[in-house]
Image (cartoon, rainbow, N blue to C red):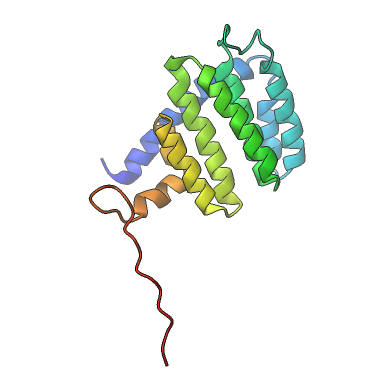
Length: 185
């Protein structure tokens, strides 16, 4: 299978997984779709406002808590979207805070869907950092998501492609770079 075909197949699988994961939130008056549309139109303030409403829908203890975890994955996705919009809007501090909240919800998420939810959250946050030009943070988020057990959806991020293109040595580490010497005349 060619790399291009593999990426296309992965995108289709990821799209189905994302739709299934989001089905619960989309089924009953979700703010998530409207927030995504606002963000795509460049209106991050509206996207943030709508994403906060989506977070509120799933934040109650009867939705996600140590005793009830049936919507923790959805809550994690909502926090991940909120983080993405906040980062795109230039509020990195708020974005990092929402990202931490997403990780907290992921820790309570049903293990059967945790890897998919993890991939979606980490990919979206990584992509937001990539889009605002913070490549180092985008790659760090990608690597953290990989270590957290994210499934293949994570690998459709720009940071994943950048990591794949970095040269490595036998132990998987990037080779050290020789010191830069000033040019002589």
